[in-house]
Length: 212
Image 1 (spheres, rainbow, N blue to C red):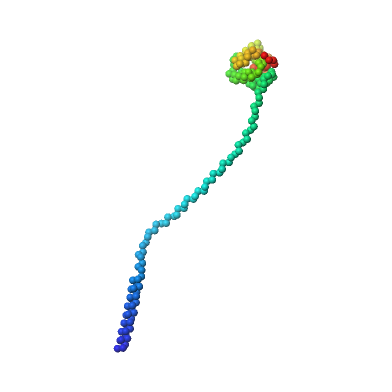
Image 2 (image 1 turned 90 degrees about the vertical axis):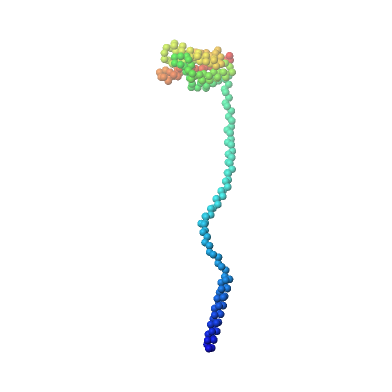
């Protein structure tokens, strides 16, 4: 009987302990916070960070290099024209303006070739510069081909044609002496074409130094 009572007491105590534990568990469970439902978010792929464009370096415009102006060459005064107050100065001026040019004519004629007009214009301009009207000899020359008398006549007509041209350009006709010398005064060999060409010429010569 006593044993039953002890067993019943033991069972009762065990039951109380179990009830207490269950009660305590329920209370703890009730007080425990409810975990939020798990939500899976679809994350967009991370965009790479776009680097900011580099700041351009400030453009520094170099200061213009100022080149000092070159020193101008010293002005050279033009050489004064020779004063044509003597026969020799007049002759030098004519020789200088004529140079190696030649007065040409149409074949077998006293007609001045147009290519020689510029030369005669220069001769006339030089003669007009003279302060005094120096007398001038204009002599015609031929090569040795043909009749000697005919050559003299042709050379005289060609010299006269030049004198008329100079007179038409303001040179007094009275100061010009036109002379035909034919082939009597060659300056080159008449046996060659080149020599004959050089002998066919007009010469200009100041013949005396006196004031008119």
